[in-house]
Amino acid sequence: MRNSRGTLMRPFGLAESTSSPVVTPLSPSVVYASETPDALDAQYDGRAHGYTYSREGHPNADVVAARLDAMEGAAGGVVTGSGMGAVTAVLMGLLRAGDHVIGGNQLYGRSMRLMGHDLPRLGIATSLADPGDVAAMRAAIRPETRMLLVEVVSNPSLRVADIDGLAALCRESGILLAVDNTFTTPRAIRPFDHGADIVIHSVTKLLAGHADVMLGYAVAREPETAAAIRTFAVTAGLTASPFDCWLAERGLLSFDLRFDRAQATAAALADHLADLPGVARILYPMRPDHPDHARAQTLLRGQGGNMVSFELSGGRAAANAFTRAAEGLSFAPTLGDVATTLSHPASSSHRNLSEQERAALGLSEGFFRVSVGLEDIGALKDIFARAAAAAREAGG
Ligand SMILES: *Cc1c(COP(=O)(O)O)cnc(C)c1O
Image (cartoon, rainbow, N blue to C red; front, top):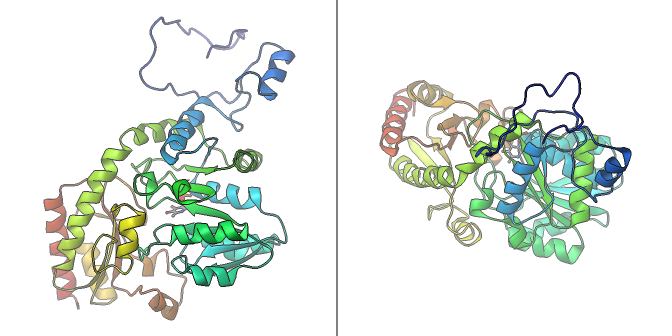
């Protein structure tokens, strides 16, 4: 990608090479120079491939989009500057004032904020229903309902949505089914194979996987729908920077290995936690005691993922003692990093709910969510055993 016209300022001193790099080069250029107005016409008309301005597209974004498209069995996805950029591009790129959208009742916090606050402010009506209950979703449908937005596995309760049932409902009702596949990833489920119309990711999490880049992705099965999402992302400035895309591509190269390793460790850790004194409840979709175990086995093809939630029998004092004693683990509200992280919904993601609302979701002061990383399972078991013992001493 050489500027064939050259300028007085740059590029300067670029040596031609007859060999090529094995790693995708980072292309931070914001603007791209064309040969002639005719050449620019050809680009804009789609007769020739070329970049113009990086908000509209650049090589690093295209490389990441192509990889994610392939993973989801899709085409024409757009990479956004964050997962929320992708959620926003889908909702605002496709809906109009007067429309109604139904969300899963345990969506990611900021998605919930969009549903509860921003969409209604713009004249788009919203309501929430349980994505594991197709009858409840059906009852929430109105004549003006255009879209259903759900996550496959809910945070932090790890309930599994009835994606097949929802897809059938959406098909018969002429409604778009948008699936946020962040927790599950295409390793566990490809929503398009189950009848979804739109797939959304926070690439920030497992896909990029190193807690050093924010990125999102959205794609639709229908090319016109995908184009509408992309156009809004470009217009609203939601698209991603070259460096973030470059980092994310590097993360994607090891994604399958990281996912499989973290998942195997999560399954073993879940069983270990279940046996620890002071642990009152354990939630992992692949355990037979999980309320959606049967659905997880078929829908997720046995892939339980890397997230484990559990409840200590003590209150806040036990929770404080637990994180203090869990030396080596970050107490940080993120997920999908190479390092195992602990989050405590009552003091973070769900702090704005009342105690009764939290209780209805089963989120006591002793409730923790673990994003299992790549550490040695033996070391993790020791840390959790020590932390659970400290929690019990403090009032478990
Ligand atoms: C984190 C997350 C998002 C938002 O992604 P960001 O990259 O943080 O903007 C959306 N959905 C789910 C399920 C998430 O976990």
